Image (cartoon, rainbow, N blue to C red; front, side, top):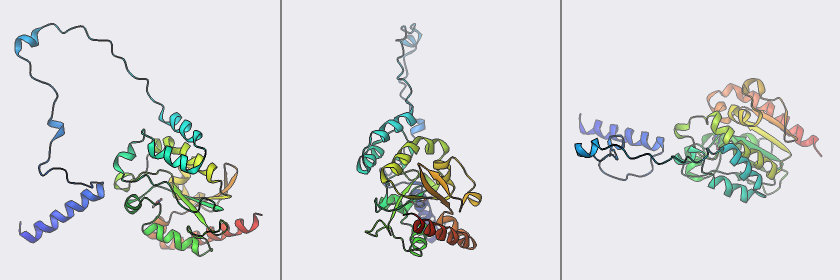
Length: 264
Ligand code: URA
């Protein structure tokens, strides 16, 4: 293999590892942990001794992570307390592969709350939702109806969060189990932010909040979540891949704008 090819291969392998979530090189030589064993070989005579009576095994009761999430989320009395409880929640394995716990962005007093899927690479790096390519499209879409995440007035502001606060490695979708475990935090997030209207961006947000999938049918159909009008919309990442669907997204934005005008 020539030197130039070697360099490109090494770069591709490095990028692949970064994509998988590797952030540090710890040692020059890899260690095969699967080959390691705690067993110390015994001399034959010792090995023939009858084994001492086994001590009774005391197993800790299995933790019901969803019930724990429900309890912790319910105990949070405001958004900072909820963010703190979520960041400290130990039972979801997604947190192990993520750099940040991405809680929310925008104005918590906004009339409109947007719920996306989960952080991607840029969101994980910056600790904010929707700051990558899909996020830039999301900002443009809502700017077209006069809404922006950093607007000081609740009237024109947005508040943005996701179904899961930790980036699933490799940008896979969160599993149904992960969504169910973290749902109590999301529902409490809606309660505490108390928006007038909720927008569910894409299938995963609809799955988590409504228990339904099939965004191409659900989009544009108003639903009610915790007593608030809720609009499923196509996810901006889908729109980046399917430009022709922007027509539907525009219709949904106009529907949102009409609802905002109709509400007192
Ligand atoms: N896609 C999402 O659903 N959420 C983000 O935060 C970024 C991309």
